[in-house]
Image (cartoon, rainbow, N blue to C red; front, top):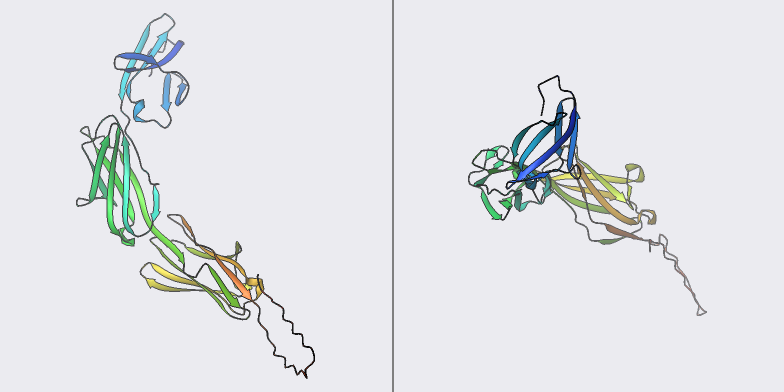
Length: 298
């Protein structure tokens, strides 16, 4: 509030109270309520307000002579949340999006939008239980082309409609090799991962051996081949395998703009040593002892 009479400069008290069902309760200056004064202006803020903070608020000035002046305002809080994050990644296929309104008022309906266009034929439901109202949008057989911004709007008679927006994206990374592999010394190791994504902005595929990124300087080679409009197979190969390259392999996919990081499963690779030389032994009936040594990761 602001007092227009500039001859009065001193306020002996500043109290804010809320009226509910005819009863007046002074707001205690603790918890989520914060008060601030800037000259003749007085402010109250409520951090993380909910519909329970709605009601009639009165700002009252008490002056040195005991006189008062006050002004009231009715506040309605309509907060919308979702069980999903604002940026939501999932696999392609039937997908459900939801938004939840906490309000002691029941909305007349909900409208869903896709990239700001109303989804008139969308499959959606609205359920209300006490002060909780949940709208669910079902996208059947969602494909990568269905990625984008989905907005849920709760409709009220006064047209002060709260909204919640979810940015829906699709991505999946699968390392197709078995969980464990064994190769002979000198053979070539090949690992293959399949990846699809609705977001390829500045993407990276990084392969790891025992949590250390592999490089071409170590003798590794990477390849990529397109398998669909938004899907690829990526490979990691290493010729002339030795026991030094036995260990746990994995791959991580990252992309920017709509940040995402996918980590594959681990594949344990063992390398078995093999003989590089054949020895011919002639024995004339005396005792014979043969010895072989194993060289490998385990």
